Every structure is written in C-alpha cells, then in structure tokens.
Image (cartoon, rainbow, N blue to C red):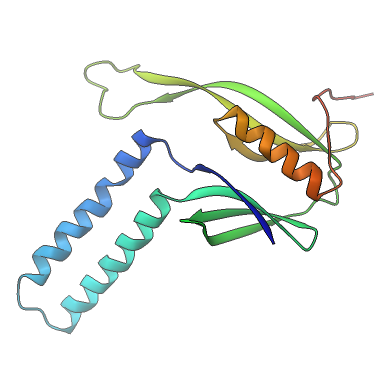
Length: 171
C-alpha cells in the first residue's frame, strides 16, 4: 500500500470557526465533572468526549491518495493514520488533467464591518477524464500547485493514466 498525504482539509480560518464547538464541549465537560453526577450525567460526559475527539480529528485531518493492489482510494488521514478511504473506479477513466480556478471564500464574523470581505485563492482540480475528454471526475481539489504535480506523478506511476491538457472533443 502506497499512500500520498497532501493538504489539510480546512483553511486556518475554517479551523478557527470549527474549533468553537469543541471548545464549547470541553467547557461543558469540565463544568459537569465539577459537580456530582449520576449514570446519565457520566454517559453525557462520555458522549461529549467522544464528539470532542471526533471533531478535533476532523478539523486537523488531511486529504490524500492511496494505491493498493492496483486500486485507487481517496483517504482522510490524521497524523499519518488512515481514518477513512473511498474507492475510485478507474475503469471508465484513461486520462488525467489539471484545471486551475480562481475562487473566493467569504470570511465569517466580518459581516457588519465589511460584508463582502473575502479571500481570493487559486484552486487546482486534478480530474480523471474519459478518452474524448467529454466526461470528467474531480479526483481532488488542492490549493498548492506543487502538490498537484506530485499527485499527477503518483497517478501516472501507479496506474495506467496519462496526463493530457483538457480539450473536450464533442464531435
């Protein structure tokens, strides 16, 4: 099994927003443990702890690709440990392409001061294509262009996929 761990799933701003719920859960657990609890109280604290660990794992997880027995998987990693993987069927796809998009992401908590405050960034989509480029499947979307070259090299070496410039032929 060969794995390629790439980028974090969320930006720093998104991590900050998403970390509010685990902070709230931690506060609730500390307050509940400071009082006398019955079985239901301990069960609630246990569920809050489980949810806290799950959310922290989700916030700091990374995306990546896995090649195993000539099959491709998209994986979610947390400290180089695979949490989840999804199999990608390569039977319909023979080519790889890279598409570049300019995107904007609105920032939260700035609506009253500047309602249109947003961050502009480039997104690079690694796509699987059919023979005529008429169908495509976005395999992974990354923010770093160097990572896209690593992904293309990984897919070309491990699978019979060929890199081509996206040019659909609808004839």
